[in-house]
Image (cartoon, rainbow, N blue to C red):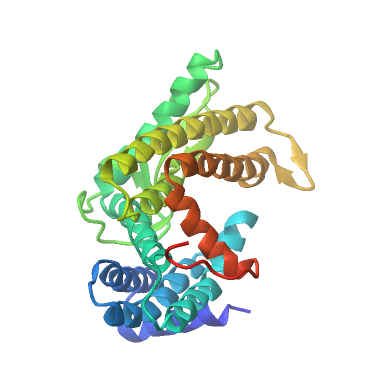
Length: 323
């Protein structure tokens, strides 16, 4: 049985004569624009109204990804995307209940979401940037394998999976290289990593670049508009390179494990799925947690905002904007 929310969005897109992917992107863009207005607006009444509308749209945008992650059996992302819609309505309720002017934590949350989504979808929506990130990610993993004495791999021809499912070399693609004007398939732009025996071990896609993780930290730090830009810049210079380096180790490990233990399986889960969807996800989330703790010393305002967000969830009284 199809998810009723997904079915409703599909029916709406059919009525407008556009693809479901285009409708999802429109929903996300509208929600992003509303939260952007709320974050930068000087009128708190206007900000609260547009935020109440924007939060559920953002939640719906991420929720629509959950069916894809169900198909590829990624439990961490299933949980995160499926919880996005109720979280969006919870945020709208929080905004509406804050009748005496939004706290600085709510303002930070608006900016955090906006400045997290803008970098990612800018890269995603510009094919040249998309391919550059994919290629750089693949090259970084290859360099790490060579450095560790585990060479013998090479990067194959950059490919594209079109919305129709057809997979062709990018050199044969006639689409716009600066504005993504057509829906892509599940793989999007991808670069295969080929072993010395000619087998394609893994495919590097944009999601392998850790751009999502970087975008989260970019949004969380940039949205601290009460913090001097030098402290924010210092935090970004710590967070972004660290995430990239950790991601290089992650990708290199997945390539080596997948190639070395091709026949390994646990309860029907192959090495790639185990390493990519379970082990690497757990390690990555733990690493992000440790990095956030490290940044709290440099940016105590970030720690206060996060605790203010968690307090309602943990059943504690929310701190005031001064606390």
